[in-house]
Length: 298
Image 1 (spheres, rainbow, N blue to C red):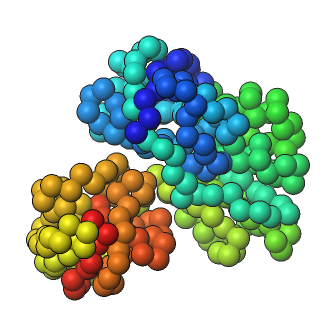
Image 2: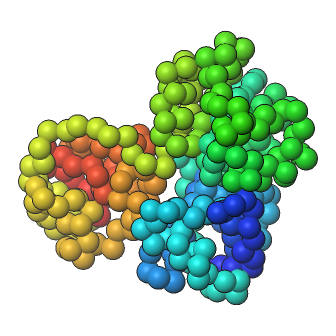
């Protein structure tokens, strides 16, 4: 973790604030558009937020947090109690939503889903367009900043005035090599999946897709470096079993969307249940399991 000092807390829309976190011990770890960090809050919660500042600024990170009416304690604490001057631990950035090279980009953001898109627009160049959707302009963070920087390449679509955008029409106007990046509520992402061809569509979800798996069964993992075997009961996660056995695995969302609990697999076949898509030799132990013994790099 990196130690930071909360430099500023600023309202950026109705119900949303931005946090500017300054490195306490010098430059912060580098990052690229699409990256997110784990933010350890003083109320013992850890939450994940997309970086929405300038990747060239190694002195500070910026994130934005919407006050969720169904908050589990993270956004509520930030909005009601967090003040400038606090020291906060922040993870090294991870990127499950990287910006790939393309001759043309269409970015679609819904509400707080604008956060990973902000640095993407800056990096993508003049071939990029943004459709930014929200309930009303007053509730949409960074509208003025985006319009000042990109002019008519940004289309602000307030649903209380204009209804929902026509994704099929947007898809029809794209070139064959265009990439579409979409971040926002589940209903928006589902509509994007229905409208845009899968090879060119990249999504970032804040909540996991509901999936069905076979009933959980117990299994064992062999921790190769330490020479220990850990039993995982049917009613517990691999993450919890490893922690109970004394392995300090980091975790965040516990839903398979943030990637903070990634561990190495050197033998056996995991049953991947995450929404990220674990690379070969890796798994996310908060949700993923196995039907037979696994060998882990622990």
